Image (cartoon, rainbow, N blue to C red):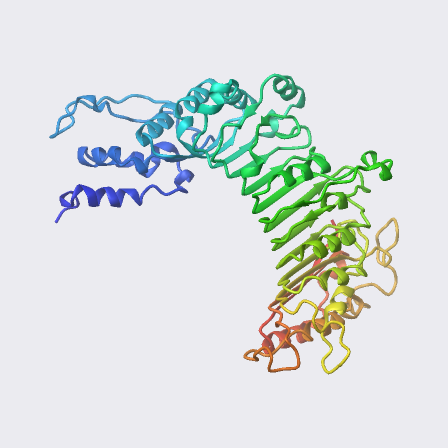
Length: 520
């Protein structure tokens, strides 16, 4: 039995599996749907009638270099037996893209476009105008000229009601070459991409390339229906802390949020006592929150972002602020948790300046925490974060054990801290006497054995059931300790603790990673 003897319905089903969403690694002419039309008349007829083959398209200009032409057939004059005339033409990339979209007919379109920084806007403007009613997912990395064309489409009230009625996912980004703030502001002073008509939009990503331009800051995108979004990702280095917070509080249906915004610089907090009182806001559905604060100065504040927020469903919180020096951040997170009583499972405090004495007070409010990651800023200062491990260790047999109920579900811990430079000369960075590799016990210097003591107190032998010992703590699965700013001469020293680590990994079901990073 030959493959062409199979029923047309079965062949169509087989063809449908060939439209791999990730086939964008090939040039357009070499994608499976396009190749199917070149095999024979029957296959081409089935492929052209199978609309699901053509409604998902990834275009990357880097893959199309040297692939400027394509072979297509004029099938307007064929009969049921054979293709009577085959006409070969040279088609541009736009013709190939248009052929995909035309063949998809009225099926929802899923498009990912990475356009050349010098791409002319006219062809794409016409394409978007023709097929905008069927867009379901759109991810676009394009120059400013293409966004200008999109703004023209949504300019009138009639157009706003007609454009993107099916759009559910939208991702905008722009090459750094096109992020000229003067050009953008000259354009956005009169035109913006208005998303008012996107009544089905649920997921929005806007990625600005650098501090010189921002989709939100420079008002290139307006009319965003924040209240209906369930996922929001904003990378806008110029977006102020208060405006970022105001946007977050408008997203009352939000489930997942990732923000890269500006910290509160010194010029914004003087005088601090005049800061307006922020109204209490509850986001009942928000489960994942990632906030990365950027900045220029080294004394910015980040705690005002969390003021008066209540997040009762929060399960993952990751905070990064490499340029901030806010002494109130841990206290503000404690207040947030006291008001929210959130079931936080994952906590990450990355590049955050904090005092280790306050962290245990926060951890006591997180009985469901499973993953803890704390990293000191990369500023060369030691923050003594290993003392956090002392606070969460379990001292067996003690009746008055403060840590007995602290983080009972904890499975994974990651701590990163810096070594200070006091062991080296100030200018030459040469090691002082007593700290040369042949003279130094590195494990003792770093306190490796004390660290493993803290970790072993929370480990149980494999097969030990919870409740069968004098604790209800979950056994740790993974522990990682990273020391940064380590002199290069120390990186090759054999640490005496390695033998004990290997023995612990044999006794307990745990992976222990004791890592060193050299000076940058």
